[in-house]
Image 1 (cartoon, rainbow, N blue to C red):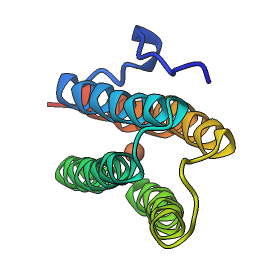
Image 2: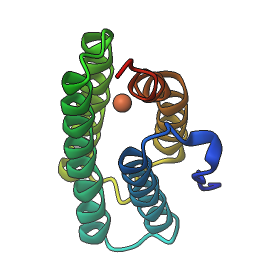
Image 3: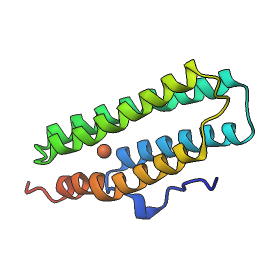
Image 4: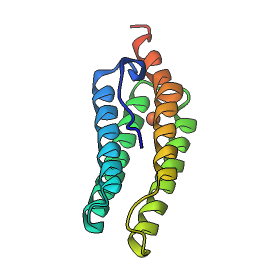
Length: 135
Ligand SMILES: [Fe+2]
């Protein structure tokens, strides 16, 4: 499966959040490579756990940022994060408690699509809002 690459087109105009998005994408790519090479299940499990916990931390950081700038669409954005966390947590449980040795391509296509469209469609809006606030 082709990796998602961070490019300037994914910049939200806030360096700290761009760095976190780069990290999120690289954790996802690492996990996908481990599945492709059928790494030991414990290794894939740890990698998945790392991705889920970083996503949780990153979403909390974004929500704190949006709160601090009084971003008007915070609630909608928070719901989008919660939906993804549910999906990730479900996937993690499914993986841990089943015979599954790897995560399938369908999961990665979904995740790549979600991350790309969420950054471009939702995150770039708080970036714009933050960078264009009156002083
Ligand atoms: Fe977000």
